[in-house]
Amino acid sequence: MILIAPDKFKGTMSAETAAHCIASTLSLYGYESIKFPMADGGEGTAMILAHIYGLQPESCVPKCYVKSDGTVGVMEAGVLTYGNTRSRDIVMDKDSAELGEALRLIMGKYPQMHTLYLGIGGTGTCDGGAGMLHVLSQCGLETRASQCLVGLCDVRVPLVAPIGEPSALMFAPQKGALSEDLPLLAARLRKWQEHRPGRSSVYDGAGGGLGFALASVLGARCVDGAAYFAEAIPWERGIDLIVSGEGRIDEQTSRGKVVDTLRRLAAAHGVPFLAFGGCVTTASSWALSCTDDASISQGQVPSPEQAVQLLKTCVSNHINLIRQMINGNAGC
Image 1 (cartoon, rainbow, N blue to C red):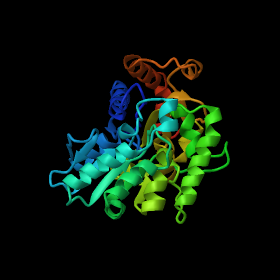
Image 2 (cartoon, rainbow, N blue to C red; image 1 turned 60 degrees about the vertical axis):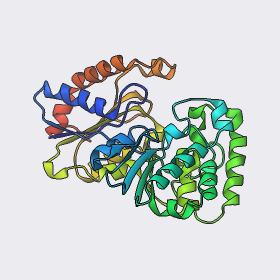
Image 3 (cartoon, rainbow, N blue to C red; image 1 turned 180 degrees about the vertical axis):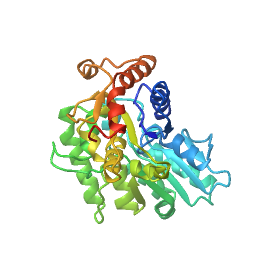
Image 4 (cartoon, rainbow, N blue to C red; image 1 turned 120 degrees about the vertical axis):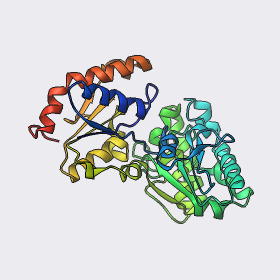
């Protein structure tokens, strides 16, 4: 049995679509599989968690789902912090206040809610969660937020570090910041951290510093998003191979992303592992690229339709390797 557990291929296909592409291709060669779409706290987290827990869409906040009795909910921070827009103006001048307003709405509408999962990946801001905390403080909701929020984090990095070392700033260029902006952003985050001394967490740099606001300031529970989803893997089904994938497999993959989480779990269970990437920039025997990495690095991202076909073709082209891995003739 093959477990197919990809993350999204950002900008081209959801985790569900990627899982279907891989499963349908493998079925042509007679392989049975379990589709297990994954997320790590970024885009797609809310929908997958809603499916797991049977949550319903909540119309007052985008990408928010709530249990019918109002006790459990899930939200994505990315859509509420300009995560769909790559903009220097946003990363330099906007904050996470809109996320704070959304939390205020949900906690006010559902006073019985005891658990609110918050996927904090894919944000467009880099304010250390200051805007969100300001709103919660103004509404007197800091204590309640600390008790019911569970941050699903997509990376493990500190809030601040010397420029060039892993921190919240390593993702700022993806959001639109220029290299000359990094010292100013670092100074802002360092000042914010000094203003809120005390605890620290391995998740502080996640979500442009939202991890710091949640874990180190509020004291809310934060966990590895990918590891949280992976807890539901049905190992009892007799898994012979794990196939994962995501849009980009690079040096950031090892910091809590879906692919690396599953690779480590597969090794711990003695199961072979393989991952398909839209672009692969790390030299790993288990990572296969679906595209010409040079063209992707130049910004030539395929359309969703092209991405689907590229993934299917890549799986077909490596069917012999998959067969060898299942039969125990290739390393994992």
